[in-house]
Amino acid sequence: MLLLTFAGSALGGLARHLLGGWVDRRTGGGFPFGTLAVNVSGALVIGLVAGVQWEAVGDPALVRQFLMYGLLGGYTTVSTFSLNTLNLLQTGAWSRAAANIAGSFFLCLGAVRLGLALAGGAVP
Image 1: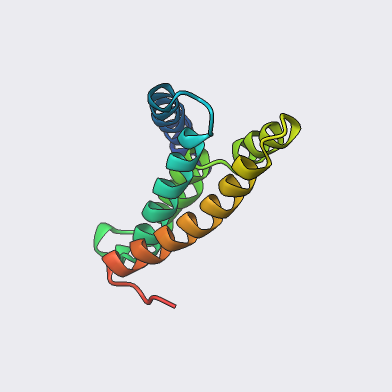
Image 2: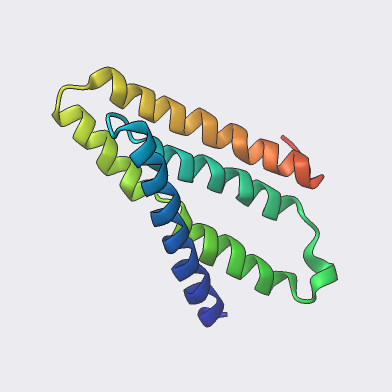
């Protein structure tokens, strides 16, 4: 299981770097849209993964270990979100920092719920 988590984390980190950088290059860098896109898309996928019945693929614990803890753990990043928010606060961009906090929270929460719904899982 440890190797699955390691492999998933490496792939997730690479995907985060590629998508986050791509989004940031296209949006100009005044707001951390790259981190937001990564975290919201990761929240959607983790909702999908949590809602799918993985028994058909063999060992559901191994699949979840790779996808949830490995791939998505390496892909999403609260540390980058925190640094982006702190940088905005330190430069006096209070409204952007607040938008980043609120947007990340509500969009990620909604994305997890949507993922669960799309996968046919129980939606709170």
